[in-house]
Image (cartoon, rainbow, N blue to C red; front, side, top):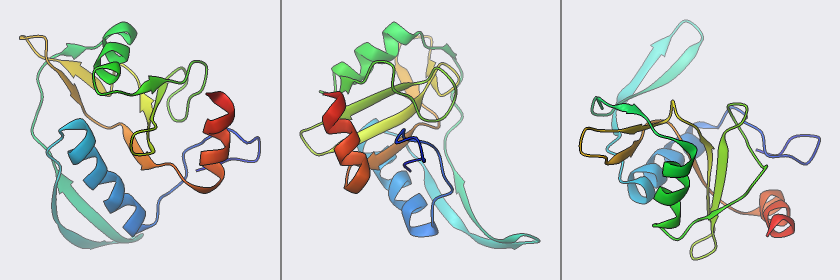
Length: 136
């Protein structure tokens, strides 16, 4: 997940890494991603998942920051991985980072509840740990 510039960047996850990200998303962001199975596609094997449909509007940057602060995450200003301008967060309590937080990945329902759709949740270790330590 670390690019040549030292900046976190999105890379294709190995199947085990991808599944760990899904488990973390369920646990950390209260998501409900379910593993349906594995299918053979022309390009190779594919993991099939599903999650509930969320109807809502895009969350603002301020709403996303408040969402994460309520979960004891710190915003990493100016640091993004994924969609250009997306937000990044880190929680030292359990060394978890969340990347690719932007309005298309966080929806607010009619009651004002925020739901994560496709944020990237990872354990902070190795090179990423050193980079985040410099940011804090």
